[in-house]
Image (cartoon, rainbow, N blue to C red; front, side):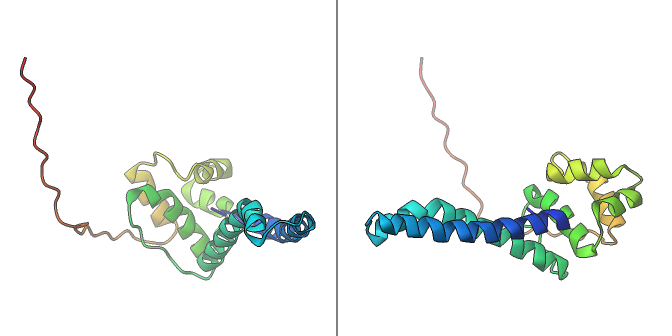
Amino acid sequence: MIRTETEYQEAQRRLKEGDRHLKVQETELKKLDLTRAEIRRGMAPMVTFREQLQEEIQQYERLRRGDKQELANLQQLGQILIGLRIVSGLTQRELAERLGVHESQVSRDERNDYHGVTVDRANRIIAALGFELRYSVSPAGPPRAARPRKVHAR
């Protein structure tokens, strides 16, 4: 996930560089008189990396435009907190000032996707960003039936 404007600029640079490498790679593979399928297989890892990088860039751009994400599960909480900061237009330094912590703390937390963040801390971050937390819980599907236990005789 792209977290800062600097990372965004670097990702765009890497994308352009990757596009140049893709063209060179394709040209080199064509010189080897490979089939189209062989060329695609040879280029697949680079194409996949490019697609992932493009997706991250698009996500960051959506967040900068103010498109918020919906929290589908609590494992996404860290990415949501980072996304809310970006949507708010705040830098890590500005969030740190609002929280009364050093910028390096926010940077470290975001680098780790707020792994292990407490509910209280997440609430303070959300409030500092000017949001409020609303939640709902809905069934994911039909309840799972209890599995019968195997009984082993001795």
